[in-house]
Length: 279
Image (cartoon, rainbow, N blue to C red; front, side, top):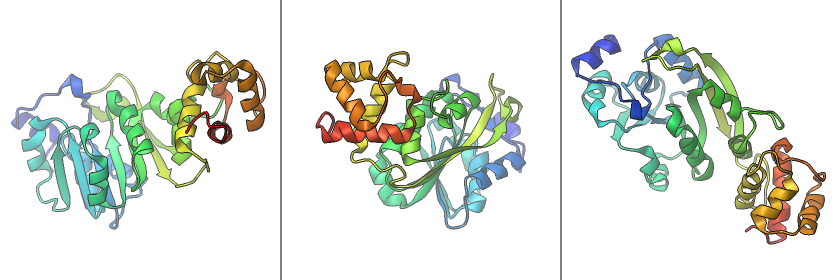
């Protein structure tokens, strides 16, 4: 295949900072990402951000079907060339965050997400699959190394946050490989990593997913405040009521929310739900 730089130049393409465009071109790395994602001949893939189509083409060679979203319409002629002959690929030009996910899932069936995500959409895209998706089997994403650390952090560490706890409710996140900045075009200012998250329904049982999300938001609304104080502020509880909630959840007094593992968030969420504090 012709060097992607030559293809881009021939089509008069220029990189747009607003889209956070950093393309991958190394065939060995692209093949490794496809393997990291567990894509095979039975897999339907939803790719977010086709870019110049290098990863899309690698996915096409391994998958049953690929639907790739691309927000930059100026890449249409580039993708028409780089994806020529990829009969199992469809490219949808538009903003994935505005797409009707329910209708999309009804059309796709079970699928896996594979993406090289720009920093500015990493969290909103991830939260969409964590909170809205019902047919997604898992997500494999290239993200900045510091974001990968947050996705896979342990409770009580500086990288542990609300997104970590949100991921843990639905799946297990693993860093599959580190990717140096030199592998991208143009070269970004940070290194990246490939993270794979396999979804498992009911991985951490909760009586209410809404209550779990509320408990997590509450815990991280003030990282240096005690969970008791955050409960009082978030749910308008008295100190006595907040203390009772913690006691019923088996959580020690004066604990800070960022020290709780996901399983304890689940217990806290169940108490909030059973007491009618959160529905």
